[in-house]
Image (cartoon, rainbow, N blue to C red; front, side, top):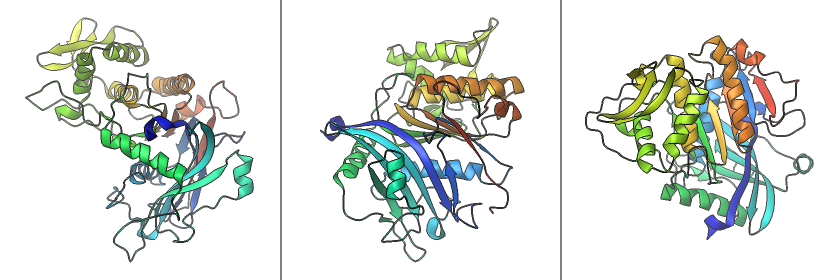
Length: 385
């Protein structure tokens, strides 16, 4: 009943505060995800020199999204991050329909060494909330001091609205509800897809392959994608074979999207999947080869757009570390156009990416309005560590 009665209409990054975590040591560091009109951005770039915290920030946001919905967390999930002396607060503006009523709330997802009575790193005043059309402020997550072993829930008395939201996410996670289509999502629950800078496609080393449900096929609040490894269950070959086996048009749609975005409908294209051994086939001017034989840039793009299409919900936050990695300068410019098209087509999507590329920046003028795009960026400043 709860699942049918709680609909997330929008789930948009609003603000983040990170304190005494990784390179962010001397004082709480804040990033505002809103544009010049005060609306949450749907396309946001992070820039800095190496070692200033871009990767740490994206990893922590992904871990936090998984952590706060865990009913009994044992650890934060990042082996290099100790939150007993620091904390993270990710503020989301969430619009939802619950009990046939529209709600616009600020949802603060929290973890770390937080004050027991007022668990927040950044406080929001009533005037600030009213300015952004926010009706209520909810805090969720867990706190742990340096002297405690277990995590304690933040906040005070239980709230029916927040309990309903957490309940529906936890219920769908337990069920492992599968996606409904390829870039045709029906589920409204939020999800984070985090792509590390290591997006290689390795040759599958598993000898015995079968048509099997891919790893992380079902719903979870966060899914981290890195180099796929050599295991069949987590490979892109398995994903494509699975989509073909479903026989509901998902494979054909995935093939069409990849060929258009990655191969630009040229002489090289994703052709089909073979039965023995089961794997994807790339046709290159009549020559056939495997996915792992693509160039590094092509593999990165195939990984991005196959995973996004297969695992997105209507409210997905896509975190990409080093958007420009392995891409030729011409492709660096083009990839921003691809993501502009994606957020235009799917208004509930948000893309937050780190980059060093001048080509990407030249395609991302903040002072020029573009229909359907709310742009923003942050230069992580020198001297914070």
